[in-house]
Amino acid sequence: MKHAGEDALAALESLLKKIRRSDSLKEKTLGTFYRKSSAFLHFHEDPEGLFADMKVNGEWNRFPLNDRSEREKFLGEFKRQVTE
Image (cartoon, rainbow, N blue to C red; front, side, top):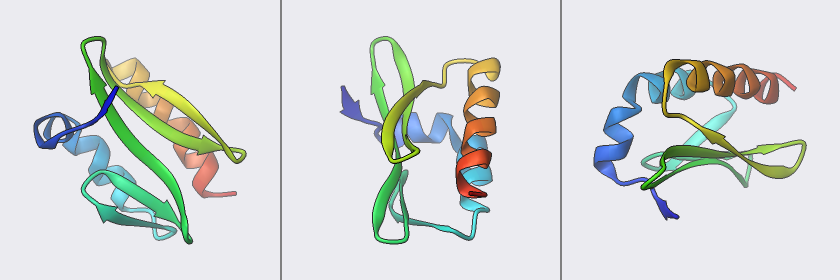
């Protein structure tokens, strides 16, 4: 599964805008976010769709982002992680 390219990330722009509001993250490259000095969140694309890989309790977890429901579920977990 390859990292999401510019076109895939453009499809996630409204989601990315919400993520970028977090003061605890730094976007080192387009769509790749760090928390402190550790990788925290990045995106992938493949024939099955778009996915976010995010650290939850120190472990990488994959979240599908192919419809509104999946994106809302991801955002809920994202908010929990960045407020801890």
